[in-house]
Image 1: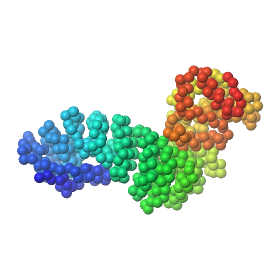
Image 2 (image 1 turned 30 degrees about the horizontal axis):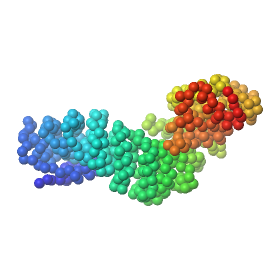
Image 3 (image 1 turned 135 degrees about the horizontal axis):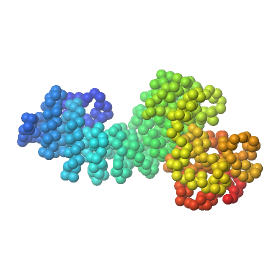
Image 4 (image 1 turned 90 degrees about the horizontal axis):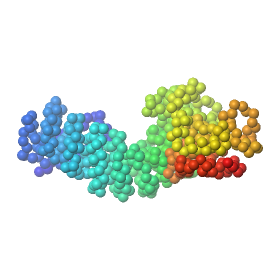
Length: 544
């Protein structure tokens, strides 16, 4: 007779184990059964062979009281006489008795890897293997690569929720899927079996997709359609779960206006007050993807009003990075809640932000918001940062250099050389035109009276020119990282373009695809392309 492996037969898991992790194991154990055998032999340590698992079920107290090393040693010595199911069940029993045995798990990892060609695994067993070895990276990396191959071969045998558990466990330990073929197949399976996914499992799948750099536009577009049209978001009662969808789409730079409409609306419907941490990520995502439809903006304003009503200085001082992400997301959309900034982004908050550890640092965001307020909110009279703080930011950000950015963005060098050959080296400047945006551009100045290029203003040593007659031109060679997969500006670029125009610059945008072709052209071909762009911008036919 088989006996189910019930939680009542073992001691509780150690309290430090995350609740969701313990719940995954509890669910996995619902399908595990044991078949006690009567033909086991004695080991050298007088413990029954692991084939007699009814004995192992009764040794919980012994495991806790110091005999576990002997038990683990006996188990590991007998792997050759055990089935995969027995090896895994022994690991389950140790785990449920609160025993974290790195020796057993490491032995199991090495044995399974060495014998991989002779072993077969069911989907449930693969999930359990991943559960037990997920804390032992990089030792288990080689085995996981083999298991990725097994999953790829037998993915149709998995339920989508089993796949979701694997995704969750791997993301928890910051493991990226190595096989793009597998993760693409997982994406297709998710769409095909969307109606069977347990809602709580989907946010973690989104995390795993994002962390493994899975960017397939058609997948995200179709998934967004499902999330919106099937009212799927109504399954979630807190903002933390909903936030993952917004954050995932923003992180892979894929827009989906319908999804964000439903997402923002659902946030407003929640009975449980959203955390500032979740709202800040949602608003950052909205800003990054430039959700400027009227309905989007109305919902964003409603969220802003809620934050103003509920925020406290204690929350801000404890988690100032949440407020900063929130304000930056709004700034991308040209929304500056000056009353909120005035009240909660004072010197105390800024000093806490300046002192955050490296993993939470907000130096770039502080520099960005400080400069953006000066440009876009002239009525905001208070200086956000002191001169000493500005100098400190410059020091922290000195590794973000113009010359390095130029070299990393390959089309920039041939473009600069072509322009200098055409209009004079002294008339072509490049660098961070707006220092709070760390992407370099090319700066030109065209005298509209003399119909010639001159030294750009920021490069001149005197101001003897009547600059009413000078058109300052910024040539922007865009990269794929600055735009969405719909070829629309992302929040940072959208904001940069707006600020450049506000300051009086004329902007030439050369899209990423065209810019990349400059690396394959000779100088004369690049010049012809640039002449067309510049002539249109200065409204005068420029010739070489």
